[in-house]
Image: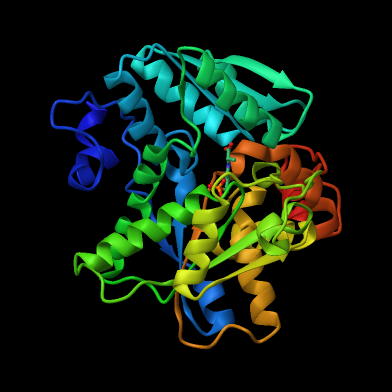
Length: 355
Ligand code: F0G
């Protein structure tokens, strides 16, 4: 039974789940921490990738969703609602399906990667596509949950961050201490806040000797935390982080400030180049938003702003297969040729010549 693994089973004492509470789990967490050889060489640092695409629905959202849906079930909810740029809805749909609850998802129409939409559809979510952006969807999801008997499972639900903090625990458990720097993409500001809480709690309990500086990266067209002001019309190829009014702004800013970290913006081109770099140099295929952290690291390194010999962990948040349209459409300009391969006769000579 999957409930024997998963973040609640492994970190129950650190989570707001009572001994008798039901556990809705798909065996999330326990994701690979992969040494990034090329990045480490290039930066003269020790760089590790926390590969969150290896979670059951292909993103870090599952860590929070197991806790949120377990809680909702304990409280007698029969339906859950969320706003999403795609991954939260995929995760909510899967965990609600497992719990026998009805998932309702509010999505910005036309801005959800096909793989994520397919996940919501196949898990049986009730999908409402809005003529608006993610920020509008979240406003409405909150109002729905206020006025109707449906549990909100966005990261404004505090138990989501509790689940997501377990990724920081896993990093410290694997490395034996916290890294000096932790890097991640930032959209709604939930995950950065969760990591900071996780690193802080481990340090307070003496399980780590230090807390990392937190370096957060946003897409240039959707960078309210970098700008210090909301963005009315956020836009980026990295649809997962196309967010103009982050719900967890305060916690995210606190994570940056208390850690002595920073926020920076990366361009869509830098994001797509970083996605290709990860795929072609490290063997790790992530979705565009997930490459924002590496894009940022590479861009800081280019400006000589990354001191040598740092230990750095980078969360790559979601699986590349979620958004193959964007990955393939970016390739021609990166590789100098079209994606379609030439078709050759099924003969060794012709094949050898084509290689
Ligand atoms: N990376 C991916 C792949 C995401 O899906 C998200 C957020 C983030 C990074 C940013 O994390 O919002 O906690 O700062 N996706 C949300 C969603 C908004 O609806 O799936 P954050």
